[in-house]
Length: 302
Ligand SMILES: [Zn+2]
View 1: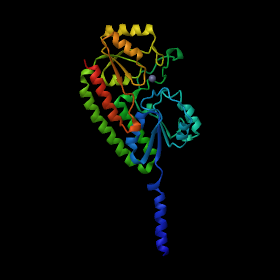
View 2: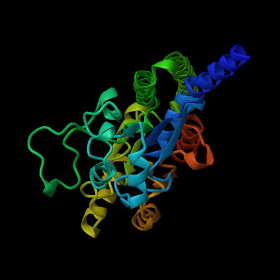
View 3: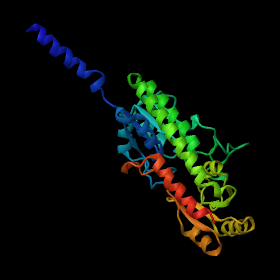
View 4: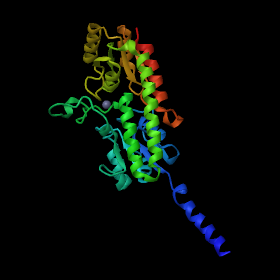
């Protein structure tokens, strides 16, 4: 009898250890980071995204319930480089969660895992618009860089949850190799766009352009975060004509009024790209990139 009791006790204690342990709680600022974290973490993690896939991640409302989510988070994933500077620090402070503050083991600034573009030389001030002093933060639209980010997330999850380190590493490797295969196929599909000239709305497609060999000749925003004004738009039209640009590319969350106007006055095709995966509906990063590649193929190939 005592032996049975001992066995029963033994198993009840077991059920409280690894198997029943709470999942690693991950909060990502953007849906692209969330999608990747979900794929790497699988059943061992619970991942939520703060910004919606339809939402410009520069501007997110720091609503109080978001601070509550962060209070319970084991890991906070951020794009970094000041992309979330307008809202994330407020939420981090309000969360009172020490682990996810800058420098904490529960905070991963994903920009530290990739090679950056457009690091400004010299002094940066507000007159230059919403310039990011550390470099351009829109690196998630380049699958080569997304692979680096995935591996960075993998390593951090393994560190925070050593019991499942092997599982994270296995899934991380699988994600990276599958993404590489998809990337090769996208590169083949988009070989025809290499060298094409495009205008973009915001300075957010530099990494995409870098990956695909597109040339961004100008931006509709005169400076990052500053809406287009008539004189600048006239200038962009002149540049687009002179350089034989073929398309205006922009993410779905930017306004289209001016872009449509320019597209009407020039041979430029207006191509609206999805800005991030629809994570709440379970869209993966790879499926999202596949859609984006299809839009570029259709709009930039002529
Ligand atoms: Zn930006």
